[in-house]
Amino acid sequence: MSWVVEEWKEGLSPRVLQKIHELESQVDKLKRERQQRQFQLESLEAALQKQKQKVENEKNEAATLKRENQSLMELCDSLEKAKQKISHDLQVKESQVNIQSGQLKSSKKDIERLEKELKR
Image (cartoon, rainbow, N blue to C red; front, side):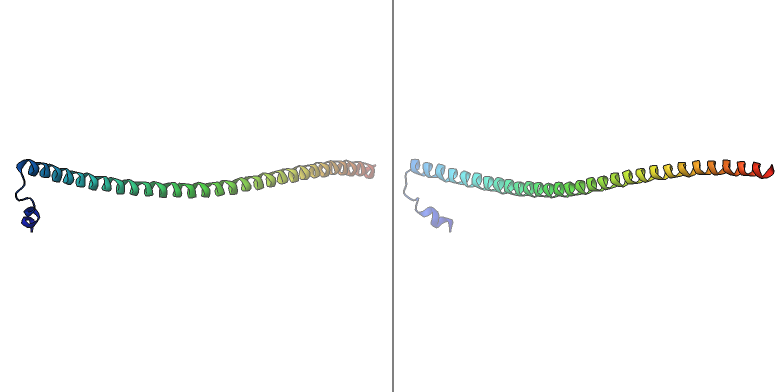
């Protein structure tokens, strides 16, 4: 079939044939360049999609970490409130123990005094 394609060139001057050959070579070169650029474009598009997916994954991870951080902050606040309540309760109980300890000492003194009175 290539001979049919070449048939139209019969009878042309060598200078014209040379120019045709140069143009055909240039067309082939441009086709190869276009294929290379198309491949580069497809590679860049794939890399871009990969980067977009990576950014999306990182956004999701950041959102997850933000929610987790918020949850941990709420937990810390809750624990701090519980600590303050327990600390207050401890102070109240220590105060009650001190009062009862004072009452116990007073009662012991009263008992000792009463025992001395009984002995007399």
